[in-house]
Length: 438
Ligand code: SF4
Image (cartoon, rainbow, N blue to C red; front, side):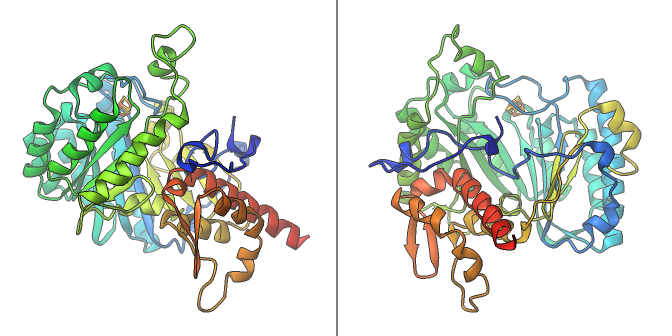
């Protein structure tokens, strides 16, 4: 079911964090509408000209083992396939880099994710980083993130990443508890020691991903996970709710014939509350819906660009992009990708341009920073925000927004439900503006 096929009404309850809605919509561009590809005849040079605040995402869709909760697109793991893929990817990076340079665009943030990017061998990492360095124009002090898993990260690879310009290492830990990790297919015996060593070896900034509500992860274990994360020396922490994609192993285990009880959204609230209490008490502040950092820590530039709908240029099979009201996804077919990567990035999905995307993306930008600024000094956008008043009022009553002199700030419950709030406000803005026009 796509988000637009159901309605969301915030409920009045004593516990908005647990009960304000009965579902959470997927975050990010609403990719529920796509054009038939034969209708897509785009001049990428014209399309991307004038992009501001660009980021780029590069996909390495291979993993050595499969986590039970995985719903990401991947290719089967084989060294031969990785070599084949890397050759096509290098062609794609060079072609996209040439286009960016021609347009005078420079990247504010580059994110290499997957999959497990550190699955690449030392030689493959060196090759990829050298091609990125010579091809992709970056602004000074840009953020360059590389995702890593403990089972594939070595001191030598950390050194190659740092020398290749990577300044932000994102380690998917999920939980430090060996039993909890083992139960969802994660290896590594001493994750705390391994993360600490990685933080010490890496010259840049290290951030950690944790997941809550994993099978067997009690509140006590999650509390230890949070404290351990802050003691590793990492400078950023993302805290995500466990997602259970329908095609994942975990969905089968939580299905009618499965061995695990299904997870409800209300069960997430005690974990989220714990994170909201413990991290500030340890001196860490919230920097986005899911991210926290100590003073002078992570700035999370790529995720801010993505959450606030700035332009994202995708590279690599299955990677998704966004620019001025349009979303697109590169083909997931390796043969197709290999034959076309040097020309225009071959597509599998392309959306029509969202109407009124400037105002809609402004809403996303504000929400990504926790403050819907409906009144500014110049009063330029106050009239537009009037359209949203009937939607904002129930959100205030439901305990998801605080009223501020210049607008509405997200409460702790509002941060948790921010994908729903963004969805409601963007829809209300698009419908309201359409009516005004008619
Ligand atoms: S590391 Fe990430 S992409 Fe790979 S199997 Fe686990 S969840 Fe999926």
